[in-house]
Amino acid sequence: MPIEYSIFKPKSKKGIFNDYPELRSFEAFRTLDNNSMLFVWYFACESSPFHETEDDRERVKLSIKESYYKKGIKALSDKDAEKMKSGMFSSKITVAIDEMKKFKVGPRVQALMMVQKGFDNLSKIIDVDVSDSSMFIDKDGEIDFAKKKSYVDSVGKAIDLIPKMINQIEGRFGLTEDKANGQTTFEGESFMDSYHENQD
Image 1 (cartoon, rainbow, N blue to C red):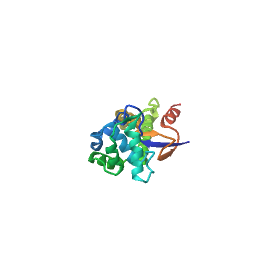
Image 2 (image 1 turned 60 degrees about the vertical axis):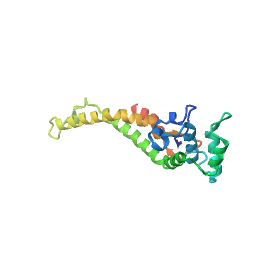
Image 3 (image 1 turned 180 degrees about the vertical axis):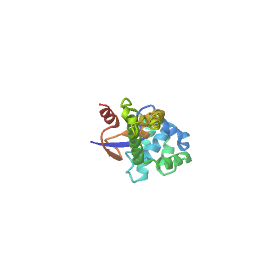
Image 4 (image 1 turned 120 degrees about the vertical axis):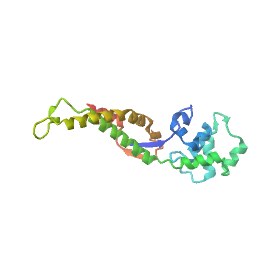
């Protein structure tokens, strides 16, 4: 079944920075409050439900509604809202919009798949049955100590890489599975389903 993905899609009431701490690492976003960051996502991200809205004024209007007007509370004055609808953004928001437009779903899906595949391959390296002594025997029937050392070194490097790869997989490069509004489709089962099947 196709899996569709969104990037940095707001997930909780705690705010988009809480959902994706990675966003704080970008200077263009660091000075924005949560409402403004939400506006930038809705207006400029390719995963936004308003991404295909060609009329900029309408896209601004929809984005303002989702980011500044919530539960009857206005976090933006009518005057400032009208300025934004006319395309008059603050310099901070303008810079943030330009930065947000750079993020693409496709390459991040590919990166996630690569890390997941790499993790699976590392597990296979570590899972080698070393009780099978023949794997360390050379063509003359002697123990190949160089091959033994190579395997031990490979396992050590694999173990060192695992924590970093787990962090990348859990962070998912800002991706969420989204059947309703994904921009990129990946044909296949989830990584964890595949991983557990390979352990059986």
